[in-house]
Image (cartoon, one colour):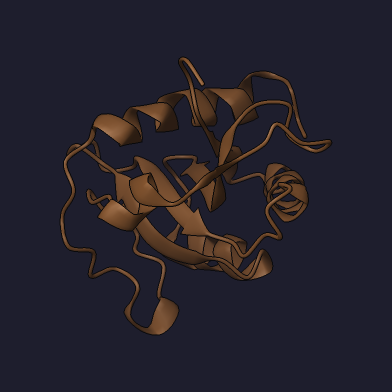
Length: 141
């Protein structure tokens, strides 16, 4: 897992997801990645069980969820390519009208974080991805 600012920055911002209001998500039809992050967090994302710490992720994290932030200039086609590369599905995000935002991507993982770490590493190699990492849990355990 990349330990410099990118991965943990994405995860730190994503921890705010637990406080975001839930809306019905309609961005996953046909697995098309929207040009801008949706502004919705399905209730199941917050209710999905936590895992970790593990050998791959040293803190608690939400199973099957990766948080991805693209560079502002990333095209919709590049965003689609990135999510397809990791066999992910956009299930929500945080936008707040900024035009970019954080994408919540479902990536099936066995529960130890190994697939999430591998997917994050793949995304960090792409020039149009600014941050990617697991949705980590902050606070008392």
